[in-house]
Length: 387
Image (tube, helix red, strand yellow):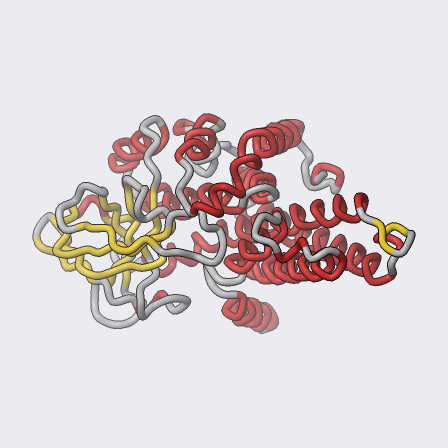
């Protein structure tokens, strides 16, 4: 349990973790394989997450937020849910990511209008940043927002929009002047004329998460829906990463722990050549390496989360956590697949929990900045600190 590491000083957080763990194992786990196989967005799980207040954790307290320690709380919830279903845990992350520009850039009037719609009205929010020609390099987006009196006119296309087809509100990044990096965030309603949903993507992993294209064709947005000052979009996205990357590390950590639990259970139940599988040196090495990677991932993820909650610069640790935990989850699930396959052939089957976790882990290396990009961020931060 995470609370044995000393990172959870409050009873409130310990109780919160235990509550989410029980809910995930009893309510979400039994549905995980079916959701993955049929590749559908599970409204029942969404409702469950709303009931437990997990889709507003990063909101101001008056709108259902956790309060002090909200990044750690988000990571705890994501980790516990990802142990049994990564797709369900991703819904928490994207709700936090998508609402970040609204919470930190919206006017008082805008927040009073929209945050109750999102909390009490249970509206999901999607984060429209990635484009066909702008992935990791978000400064090169092509979607535009042109000021026309008291409105902005938005035109462009977004892809890989998590919750794109099920959200009621969108945080949209668009260029507000010529040149790379001159971008701004806007709040856009789902019902806005000119906004349409494109293809729903079929994915390798985290298949229960809704991922779509979203098109913006002459979408008129009130000027008051500008989030932050014009031209601050890139900086706001970078601040958002400092919150989201520890959460993705927590997701990768949860996936790795779920696979590790599965391999331990498998070892307890199987014998070969008259002895326990756990007596084989190769399996013992796998257990030791996996356990070490899990604890190292935990330390990085929650250090980054704690720094963010304390208002301290966590950019380096957020990228370290995201890249390390994602790579660790990929290695642990791959090793688990290999071990089970060699010993029984079962690991390669579609109804194997580990096979699903192996596919789910891959996304943690890709989204919110690929792990290759994370290494560039880490290096840049280290060089900056050494100046």
